[in-house]
Length: 46
Image 1 (tube, rainbow, N blue to C red):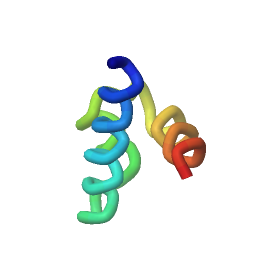
Image 2 (tube, rainbow, N blue to C red):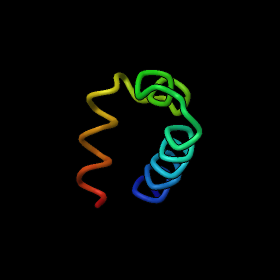
Image 3 (cartoon, rainbow, N blue to C red):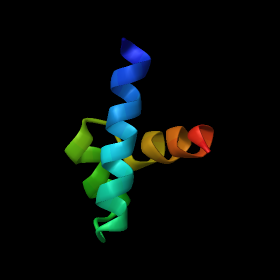
């Protein structure tokens, strides 16, 4: 379940980034501690 929810958060963050939000804004919107954590997870998901 945890992996599923993290996947949803990543999808939403990717959508926000594609809409022009900054990495910091996208990370905050989906509950990541910082943009670096989000970037690391996005790279791992590729």
